[in-house]
Image 1: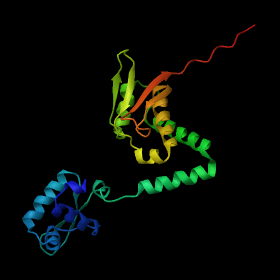
Image 2 (image 1 turned 90 degrees about the vertical axis):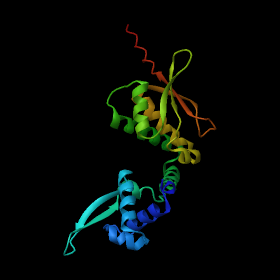
Image 3 (image 1 turned 180 degrees about the horizontal axis):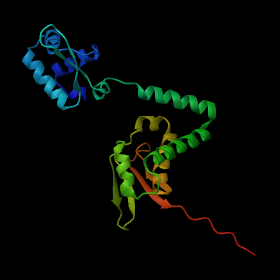
Image 4 (image 1 turned 120 degrees about the horizontal axis):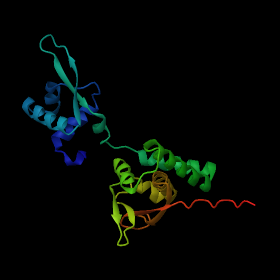
Length: 212
């Protein structure tokens, strides 16, 4: 996101990153060698975009100075190494418990994520709503037969799943738990597909035991 900002706005955010307590308009103007008017304009735009907020005021002996600081959202735009940590953790866990237990763990995580969102079974539309809250960019697609499928245009774990396909088990367990069925994963971006395509299949009830 920072790449889409102008150079001055990037420099302004970088200055605030290095001054966690906040900076005043005068300090920012001096630091960036631009006018106070320009700083006010940039701050207004960055506040609107949720990147900067007004922090504490600082006494000066005259009018208190308003300090500006980064929002948590702005801090997340700077480089992070979540991928590196996740890869290292999965490799370590796989070495400790083995691949089959790792797949079981991923399914367990998927079920827990589902139960955090819903306590009962929901339909495909509601599943898509939950998936989109997590960034999957999913939709319900109806085939010519009228059967609904869930199509996700964004794999939120794509780089991680490319290195560790077992991560897809989390998606399958999440969708299956929410929908109360088994999930057919007919197309997968990790396997070269254009989208991730899921089909819910109801779980067949266990046959009743015959009585004598």
